[in-house]
Image (cartoon, rainbow, N blue to C red; front, side, top):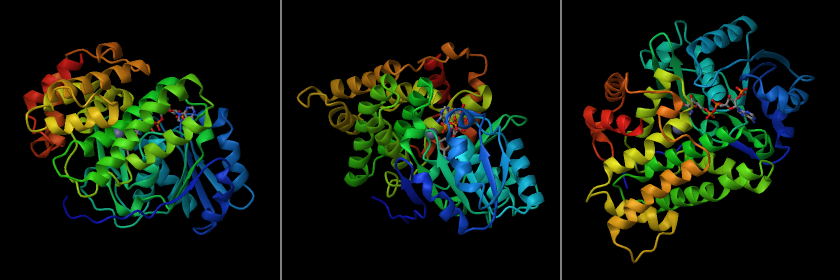
Length: 386
Ligand code: NZQ
Ligand code: ZN
């Protein structure tokens, strides 16, 4: 295990009706609130009313709706403009990773005089940010308890991430009943994203049984509960465990001591930059193909652990058989929860594969990943997904 610094400043309010503490948390930061949200799901499932009930009497609330999946820099610019015009004190993001990430960029962009895209690319450093609270409506990214944000710039055809300690949410509200209205494909995609966050840290060489044991527990949990939530969307036990799993998968707990760049995310971000697809769907398609590419003598032991501890594969089988079966089980699981498992099913052909591989290789650092990948390897992984 390598040296690390662990910092996790977000206060979590988990459970049904915990939204009742929202106003006391917002009060700490001021009177003028920007409430951000997505394309309108919160107006259909009662979450908008629940948040407003907490906020409207005590605060002056301004709204920025319409934040799109794979949030665009234009929404961030709009948000910064509202914050400046109305002298906003605090942001309350109500939604999934897209709304939370755009809100993080708005929070930082408020204190940066030029275009907020500079903060995403790293051209300028984030020096200050407005306080942010989140109300989570989909279990997927873990953005509610981390300092990451991923923003798209369609004009540049780029989707890039940034990290800053300054944009960690001050508090996040996780009510599993808010997940009841999720469409099946979003439930499935959220699980794929959760699993991928775990995989990206788990498949590394450092020996870290605490982090890896937690990773395996998260994987077993989502594998068990996702089919239940799909069959019975209002199952509170399933939704609760899925919700906490996604938060735990990307709040640094499985990552500490095991640093290093991620492969599948770097490849997926190009897919969604080029084709605006759902992040978790792209990851599910890529993951088993990436696993096939990185399974070798050196990584075998890790795949055997994964196969036995996560999928319960018989330990008396040959190591290679266990490893290969674990990859097949991963593929079959994603398929069983309704994810289209080829890019062709999303209408994506081979036309831009080379270009995507080039961009992924340029934006990522594949020579430092678990098994280093060349640009040609990346191209072949995309091709295997077609
Ligand atoms: O926009 P609305 O109408 O709200 O609908 C959303 C959206 O269409 C819908 N939805 C959300 N909650 C719902 C609901 N529909 C019904 N009932 C509910 N309760 O779900 C759709 C997807 O929402 P989105 O926020 O895009 O999903 P997700 O949380 O998966 O976020 C994906 C974004 O986060 C980035 C991804 O790249 C992508 O841009 N990521 C952010 C990370 C982070 N900040 O740490 C890490 C991740 O690896 C990821 O890259
Ligand atoms: Zn992800």
